[in-house]
Image 1 (cartoon, rainbow, N blue to C red):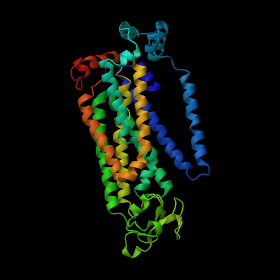
Image 2 (cartoon, one colour):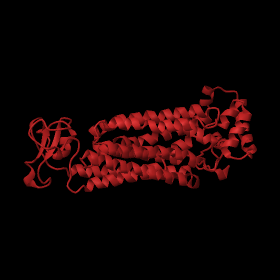
Image 3 (cartoon, helix red, strand yellow):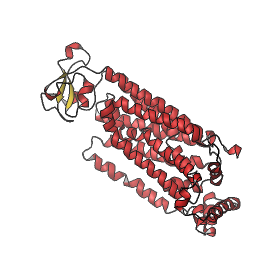
Image 4 (cartoon, rainbow, N blue to C red):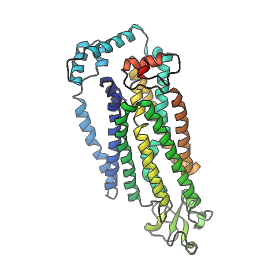
Length: 416
């Protein structure tokens, strides 16, 4: 929460969007490199211990770097420490010519203090409620688009697509996460050129189309699922998809998957993730959670759709909710409001992540992705009407947008 807030408060207006978005880029970079590290350690005994332990290294470096940062000038002025604020601004800007900027900050702080309202009264004001409603909606929508199901369960999704080997799935998942890292820089390069509004709406269009494609591919793959012969408690299942959907059954193939003569060797057997409990089936052709394929057409289609999905997400919805939230609140409620919006983000992160596997069980993989697509479409419709453009505006100017009583979705810096 504090990092995007700090960056927004110390950044010049003309590059503020890029700098706030850079924070998201570095987060996605960490996810990509951790994915590569996971793949490298996947077959190492006790590899998960190394994965957790190595995460402490960048945390220590970041902590030491924070010790060198000056306090936010806006915070210092709000506490009456004007000389310290001036010194901090000079250090950040690298020039002593900060008088105009410092005067703008002082004027905004004085205007806020003159209103003499406490935090709870301020939060209930129509101006703050409009901004807070928009900020919380953006953070909730970011998660409801399904981003962290892809980041947390990427390898599982790829296995469901037909790549049954766990190590292969982990490597492909790491490659998908590279799209998130790479295209975040596209968003950074465009945020102060195209603006927050266009990037957000364009991102949602791409997300919607990618999710629909993912769902459609899974749906077709299920319709064309390999026929299997069930035995024992698994005798009710006649296809591989139905078989692996059960928590007690797995699919065993010892012949050509699609030849009728192989039906006797395409079996649905009781078992666990590691092995069957009835009959014999080697680890190379035992699938407990996904169905193998011979040409991987559906699997590669899903892989490409995931790559495009993350490219669209990273260039807009990945960083714009944080950038916009860091800009739209008055200074006297900024920290509190950003905390609330961040809490909404993590709440929906938890909700979506915890329910993904359950939704897959209830609606099948295609149903889960179509559900996320519907959220993206609804979010697009709402933001088309309600999202203002804040490109190039000082934080104090942005407040005037939310103080207006008319519709503010099309207001831009040129109209102020």
